Image 1 (cartoon, one colour):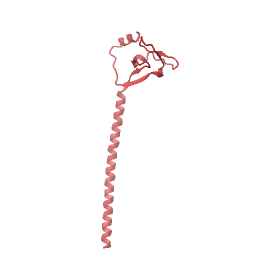
Image 2: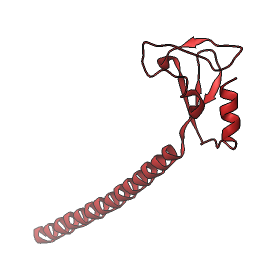
Image 3: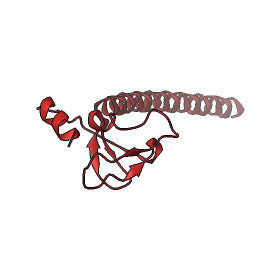
Image 4: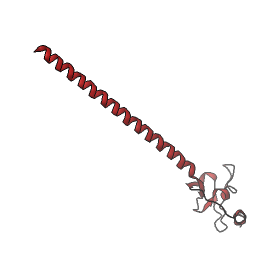
Length: 120
């Protein structure tokens, strides 16, 4: 009887090892899928951030301006203050007071009109 028990014990051990091997392979496949999914998500996130660009700037007074318009009056030096381009407001601000707003790009259809409005 002892040899029969030894054979059963060896068979059970082999079965257990085979089950463990299968489980390890299954977990490795799941890990690979997870890594692939994570990589796809990173790529999609990168694409989304590339589509989102700085489109507007909000001044401390609350007025919103497109980047191409407001850049003309933002001082290059941190010590110098600028004034809001809105002729009725003209509130002073410094470059670090500006809040950046990101979103989908806005197309300026009439460059001349933008320049005329800036000088009002």
